[in-house]
Amino acid sequence: MGALHSRVNQRLGLRSDMVACVIRGHISGSGLLSVQTAGTEGAELIVFPETFLPGYPYFAITHDPTETAPFLARLRENAVRIPSRATEQPCKAARDAGCIVAMGVNELEGGTLYNSQLLIDETGKILGVRRKLVPTNHRVIATSILTDDILKALGNGGCVSKFRTGGGRSMIVDPRGKVLAEALPDEETILYAELDFDDIAKAKMVVDSCGHYSRPDVLSLQLDSRKKRPLQITREPD
Image (cartoon, rainbow, N blue to C red):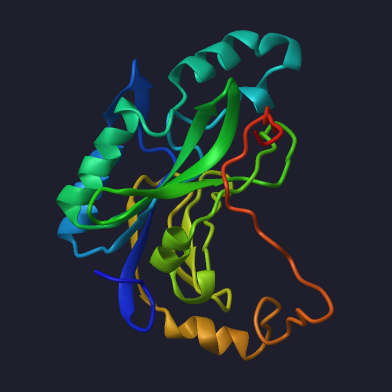
C-alpha cells in the first residue's frame, strides 16, 4: 500500500479509555487487540488517542503539584523508549493487520518525557515520532521530528491530521470540520469512517495557508528534521 491520498480509505479513532499499560517493556490490555479487530474490518489507518501508552497523566490535573512526585516516577518508569521491546508489539500488530498505526505515547529519551505520536507503517516499520510542540499546563513542551517517510505515509502535501479527545470523547473530522463519526461520552468503542483524501484539495480551495497562499519569496519556514542532542561538540579539522 502506498501513500494515503487520491483515493477513499477507512480511518478510525480508538476510545481513550481502552485499557493499556506498559510493565517492564511489555504492553498489555485491549488496545493491541483493537488493531487486529479494526484490520479485520478493513481499516487502513488506525489512530489512537494522545498518550495512550502508558496512559494520560490525569494526576497532574486532579492532584496538587506537591503530591505528584510518586505518579511522575511511575509514569517515567513505564514510559516508552523508541525503539524498544515496548514498540515491538504495536509494530507486530500493525504488520499482522496490514494497517498504518498512529499511537500516542509518553516517550522517554535522555531523561525527558515527551508527549509523542508513534507512527508505524503497514509492514511494521517505525516511520518516525511526532513530538507535541504546544505547551499546555501539565503537558510537556517538546520538539517535532518529521521525516519524508512520515509525510508521504500521512497524505499528499504532508497533511498531518491530529485527533484530540475532549472529555474522553473521540471523533473523526474531515478537512472542512464535518464530524464523520463520534463516540458517546461513556462509550468504549472503535470509530470507523470512509475518508476521501481528495477532500483536502477541496478544502484548500477555501483556505490554503501552507499552499498557494504561501509567499516563500517574502517569508519562509525551514524545518531541520535532524535529531537534536543537548550536547554537540564541534572540533577543529585536523
